[in-house]
Length: 380
Image (cartoon, rainbow, N blue to C red; front, top):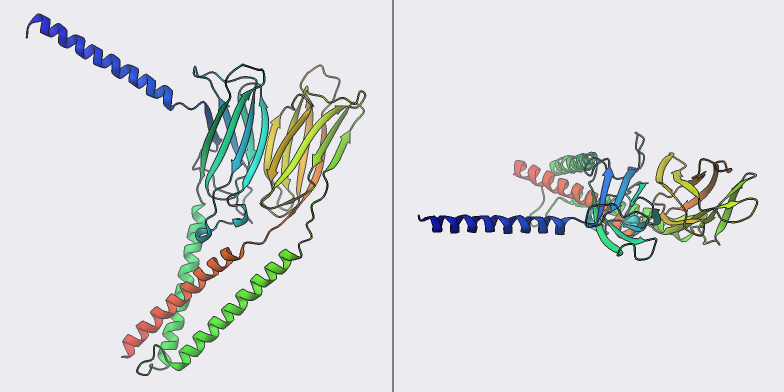
């Protein structure tokens, strides 16, 4: 190879490496999302809310950050966050079918450092969708950003294990019943099963249908007689000689629907709203004392902090708000205000109940068929 050819080869290789390097940088910049979501515990290490859990349950900490192309946090920004629950799955229903395919939270949060954190109890398994819109508080500070994020919440393996055990038990009961009934007599020519067996099966089916009707009619009657009524928004006030905290919004909520809530701090002397405060919000389910939602943030320019929250458990909740002055030299002292929110439960939809009942009855029927068939083969 001549010297000129060697030089040309080296230049070609160098050029290809440069192009590859630039393409790699471009791809890395393209893949990087301006809005990032992190959770604590990490994804895969937490499960959805479990009713009647024996151990205390804590909400998941969600952290949202917004960065520019240089990787710097977008300070003094406004985050508008919407969390949507996983879509409806009628054939594999979750513990809260009414919550499926609904809005869980709507929050407008001011982020002085370009980061928002809040705690949210996630009610069901599946893929949650987060719609995040980030805009500058000051005009022309940066271009608004909108992004859709997803959060996968796996089901607790213990639930799959318990359900499998239940199906195995029902199948064993069906096989045992079929074996015992098949022992009594053989079917006549052209008959699927002996007369006695057919009568027992017919009676069992009638009892199952009657039980199902009673359960579902009772649920529908209680639903139609639900005493939940929409009421005007009410205000709860807690004050001392210097500071007044107001909680306004819905005192009554319904599972599957958003409740409108708002807090504000007012100077007790001038009766003017205060913006130089930090609100610590926490909603707690009162029956089992677990936290459904928690957030620490500052009010908007009007001194108000607004959000919409779904209460997915039909039990009373308590909203607790602590107002803390941001300035160390402030003459105001922290103050706490509380409000109790009644939550109306909603019955599980009829199709979900029928499907679940069908799985259980179907398992028993399959067991009966296996038992009868096995016994007939032995007798024949």
